[in-house]
Figure 1 (cartoon, rainbow, N blue to C red):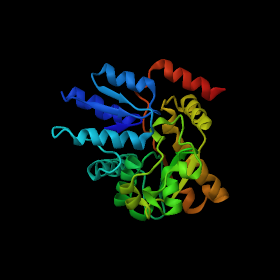
Figure 2: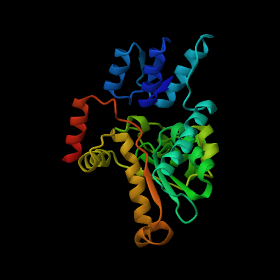
Figure 3: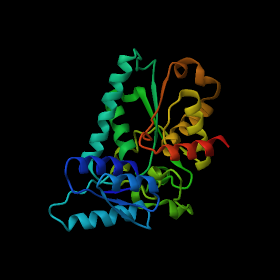
Length: 275
């Protein structure tokens, strides 16, 4: 499979544990500690100097040459997309267990970090299937790599990349470092998504430090992008944010990863966020 980070770790570690020969193709944006962790679990890591799209393209080509190989394709796999959608049903169960109603008078807002779109797109689809118009889904992307926003704003889908807009595609949020959105996901969620927000890298570390300080929860910087989407919605609603139907809204900030970060990496990131 091709990855910038967490999906590659999940699939790679799981596959190796089950006895498969796991090969993860990782783009230039992937963090070194993730590559080291994969190799320590017996996974073959192939590194590229190119971005995510080129990495996936090459990984898919090499996999197709081997009839015994199966390529986990976060860019265009309907099976993986539908797998992510199960999150909608699981969230519904969690909210019910906490006696949190979701209906017309008690809407739900969910904020999700977005890279190529596979995970957030599948989750968005699952949430809409579960809650319909009572849920509002927002994506958050790095300022320099807002590939899904570019797709949606122009209507070009995967026909546009962030470099076409003069952006670098570079970001510390390795899981979101994607220049071109998934055509499959774009076609599925373009009428389902409620909004988008972009976030500067420096804010990711500040969000991370604030969350650790207030809730003693540690998530990696890319997962913290969701907080910017929440802030954007709050700012847009203004005084009405805490009144009327909006005041009855339940807000869910999707935390997508971080439990495998080495302690020294956590300390480094938190120090950056506290400066």
